[in-house]
Length: 553
Image 1: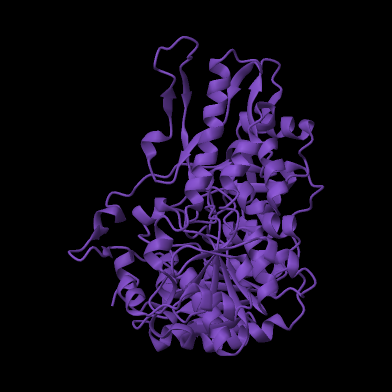
Image 2: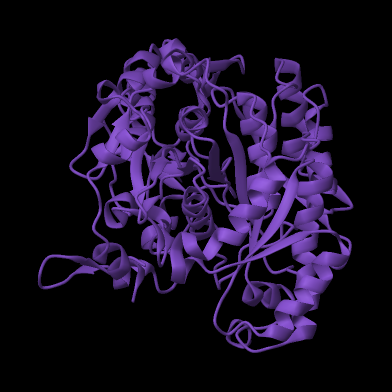
């Protein structure tokens, strides 16, 4: 059966019964139909005295075209923990329409480890990303309107882009203001995808509505004739944007196919943004359960590093365990095989590809100080010889391994993983950041590049070099760095999978995000507006004769 058929064949419970089981009072619930709801952020304030749950991070090796099933494992693990009578809550990101209609075709897990209603979550959900898109574009309209009516703030350069939650490469560079109206000045502009917008980052990092408004007001939208920053609050825009985001800022709750609570809120990409769900959602989850299972986007070199250095630092979070997800197919791909050969037994390629996994584990365990377990998302064509080889390699490195079969069995397929996670969570760890707040911006970039990516050094464009110096002069040395890099490789070259020769990280551009309170560092050929693949998933998505959605994976 396909994922959508499995999801549709499962009888969901009314969301009221799901939140009631989590001991959430009705006064905090706003239902969106039978199976979705928003929970007021006021709930977390009432639980302030309650001890935080154990925070479990699910991450992975560098992704491949074969898929690793990180979200599927996260959902299956939460279900398995609940089967062990541990009160476990999921805290995940919202899917973006970009990858839903692009490569992925859906991002709500798979098989019997899914969150539901999957079609609604994958599409418009509760409208949060639309609200973020609208807020972003209202700010753009206010800027251009201000310039049209005399430009009192003396804008010389506008740096704020519009956004849309779709992959549309034609919008990377555009020209606007072509109506030839009086005072309308044409200029080059461009679009980002909504999940790379600074509004999305702020939405996910703000601790409350007051903090949300403050951060929005601090956004730098351009520079004046004296090269001084112009901020959103100079345009009196922060109030209206906060109003647009007010309802969206309350976390969304849905259920797994095993009727366990899942909080899904916020959705920045990890290759071009910081890759974590909202702080308000995670903090709410930590007060509702004994275990919170969350994930960070793409591989641990991106998602986990940003989870630690940006989200945990900002929110004061301390994860207990990291689960690193891989498949034998993906490991063989990293070992040099073509996609079509990865389902065949090949011990040599597996051993070679395991180097990618071991590097991620080293980062998680040695550089971030986390207790780590490897979860292999098991397939029927995985052979005993391959499994025994991987077990041997990991045992020699004193690394826990669990074979998970959550796609086929749901939570029952991750009982071993759940038991080992519980055991690891009881052990002390030495959680730490990759760099210190007081490090210079260059030192932060170079520590991530060398420690996490394994690069021998960093090369900066002339513009990036000057801008980093300028940002420090403005007083932003203490900001963390959010490195925008390909997800497919430790290097900034998507084709360099093995990274077995010395390489450098090439910094093309750095962008100051004073609302999000981090510096975006763009490497190699990275775009903040993705494009569709040659055969987009959109070609398969349709309605059948009964009006049911089909083609979402």
